[in-house]
Length: 112
Ligand SMILES: [Cu+2]
Image (cartoon, rainbow, N blue to C red; front, top):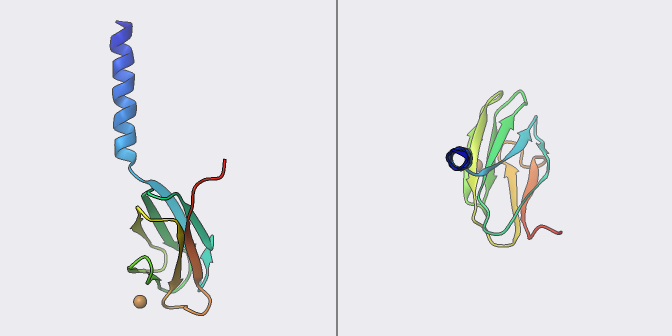
């Protein structure tokens, strides 16, 4: 009986992990700014970057290095799947506010 309970709990936790999928990282776009300006991930990791536009006009998340370009309407959010990536820095910007909306994805080993 105890074993059955253990197996059930194990099955539930594995299912939860599978459904949860990639780590989610939030990036807020607001009136020509990004916050945070640095998104850190580990080499080989896959993340879902949730870009939320809390500003009053549209933004376009864009990165040449990451090969991504996606419009996010005001008050909406988009999901940008990233990774696996090699160690390095991958700049991104807001194509509708290229002068001010800037940031980078930094891929590095976690420091213990
Ligand atoms: Cu663009």
